[in-house]
Amino acid sequence: MKQNYFLPTPETTRVVESPNSRKFRICCIVAMISLCVTLLAPWTHLQNVYTFSGYLDNISKPYYHIVEDDKFGMNSTFFKLHSSKVTHIPENFSISGSQVCAGGVPGVLFVVPSVASAASKQTRVDIRETWASAMYGNPSLQTSSTSTDASSTSTDASSTSTDASSTSTDASSTSTDTSSTSTSTDASLTSTRLAFFFGSSNLSEEEMQSLKNESDTFGDIVVGDFNDTYENLSLKMAVIITWVASRCPHVKAMVKVDMDTFVNVDILLNLIDQLPAEEHPSFVFGNLHNANHPEVMRTGVWSVTETLYPFEFYPKYVYGHSYVLSGPAVKLLAHSFPYFPIIPNEDAFVTGVMAVVLNITRFYHQSFADEAEINIVDRFDKNILTSALVDSETRWKLWDSLKKRKKKDYPA
Image (cartoon, rainbow, N blue to C red):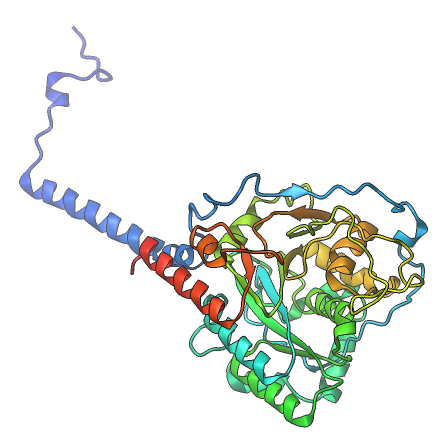
């Protein structure tokens, strides 16, 4: 009978492995495992720094809600951009902060409005050494730029104003003009940087020199040429957003953080990743103000005149202590600010009024900071909070707790 060579026979199914070939096979397997471990090591490190699986386990679900207004007066022509420019957004910078987005594009840029007082300087040091420490390497610069590079970019206003005006004329064109400031467009949520922002109008020569020295050391200082007062917080935020759209046009998200706020960066990045960004590319994300109809104050430090804002209530908005703006929202806002009057109360203006004007989606989650927090340390220990209002002592308590948990979950 003819042998069928496509069917196994007793002679073909029995294979005898010599001792030498077995040793060789084992060595190959060991070598492959070793290679895999080597190749995965950088990714493992990245996970240690930024994304801990399970960190959202204790965060309340769903991970976001969408704000719905009752549309009071929002069909009014007030909530529309003017046809011509009505607001001047300063675009000159005494310290340009060009190194913040140099050497690669951050996926998420943390922006922190600051002032030049001695107490605030110490707070900046504490922020760099606590919740933002993963953004700083050794030496302390956030980028590969040397201190010489940093000092060369932090010159006087006359040398930077020309560059600023040529790159920040209007947000619709600046993303193209300034893309050369970034060496890559492959922005990732796990790539993060931070910048502190100031206005120069009230700074003494000594304070300006101190900020230049700080910029040389850390590469995270930006000083715009505007009057930095409490009444100008909305203008300051408009300057910051315009700067980000111009100098870091490829960021996926910008996170505004106040000086007195602590951020759990790992939880925040994971939460941002849960948002339906494809369906809602322009969004703001934070903790919703607890009033159904946030009242407009006509007297006191937060007062707004009826001429400037004629309504009794603001649209619903998120608290200004910490909130996220998507990259598309940053560009849209930067382009639109000149065509709308600046209204005091930065969070109500940016995340409420302008969100309605520009149809920016407002996401909210209760894990962001608010003004009525209790048991902050305990809630941070349980991974319940994304951010929290803190004093200096609490900031270090939260950081010590966070370090211990990271070491426990990801031992060296």
